[in-house]
Image (cartoon, rainbow, N blue to C red; front, side):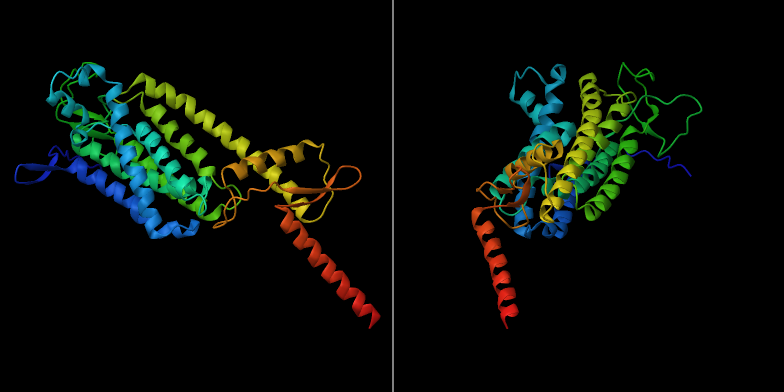
Length: 359
């Protein structure tokens, strides 16, 4: 059964002269969902509750600032020039609605990098990405209901015969767009905000399952997120009443590129792990082979982004390769001290065996 109600009351309640909007309440709940999720799941990557709270305080403010900035900057006819204080307030009035998720992503990434730089001895960039990606999609899904109460981010008027009511269409009191095929009057429009909300909610569930199961490819959810979100956004721009051509072009660049980079990452990481398993088993590896060169390249990148074991700082010393007369690597060690400790253990075992034989 279709839901045919329309929610046109944007104001939730008032405290004196202060109006509390549903849009702000919904976005706040979406952001708090990220915090609650992080408090429960952060321990899996060695983050305390205080660490998660700091991560939240870095990401959210920067995400909000950039989300509003990118929304305003591509709409100069509405927000510029600033001839008075009220014009400036109008430009920053996020409580009136108007943010872009792409801008929020840029700000959020900046906040995440700042946090990682401060806590790189505890966690890694790929671990942070995998922690954040599922809850980011969940927050986006919840946040889209703010568009519902504000009657924004909807689509063109639906054609005759198209189902009326959610989840298919939403009733808009007044469209006001000369570009819409409704002629600016009210009526039933594609519920594009809900299409995206459903897509991102499904993604949040799928990503969470992948994160809990995936141990081999840390950080893969970063590539998957860029693919998942930009794919649906690129397609919905054909229907949205407030579509921005630059946004659609950007999405069409990002989603195939992120998919391709994700595949490259999986291939390179698989080669790296295969060579490493041979070295760990004491097998001979030809240093001139392409797979060994890939292994060294991935190991170098891993070291630069501190992809070490949880809780261990980055090792500054270069790995030491033990090669045979033909130049093939037969063993590797993270440092000279680790190599000597390994040799001492072997000597200790050898001495014990000799002593047992004498007895």
